[in-house]
View (cartoon, helix red, strand yellow):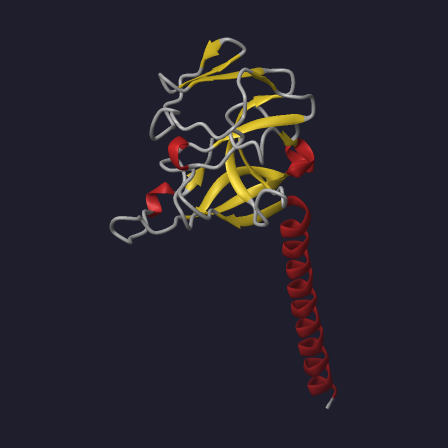
Length: 194
C-alpha cells in the first residue's frame, strides 16, 4: 500500500515538474517575442531583391539594437503614412546630407556616391521630397531596395522618419515568401540579414 502511494506521489511530482517546465517555457517565449524580438512579415515588393513579398523576418526590438546605421534594414510604423509596418533600408542618419541625382539614378550621402549592390534598379522615381536634404537629428532617411517600386523617404508624406517610429532592426530571414514567378519558396535564403 505504501509502495503504491509512493509511486502515485512520484507521478504527481513528475507531472507537476513537467507542467511547471512547460509553463516556464511558454512564459519565456512570450516574453522573448514581446520585449526582445518579433516576427514580422514583408508586405509588398519594395525591398526586392533583398526581401520578397511574404518573407517572415525576426526583428530585434529597437530598444535593444542601439542606434540605426546606414545599411540597416528596419521595420517602422508611421500611421499617418501607412497603418501597417513597413520594411526599408536606412540610407542616412541624423546630421547626414542626402542627395539624389534622378537623371543618373545615383544616391549620395555627404557628397559620396553610394555603391548599392543590393538594389534592383537605380533611383529614377521622384516623390516630392526636395534634395539635397539634411536628415534631422534623431531621424533616419530610408529607401526600399526596389527603388522605382517603393514608397519611402522620397515621398513627402513619409519624409525623414523619427527614430521613435522604428519598431526594430531586421536581423534574420526566418521563413521565405513564395517566389513571384514560380510560387515556390527558396529555403536557401533563410539566414542573417545585413
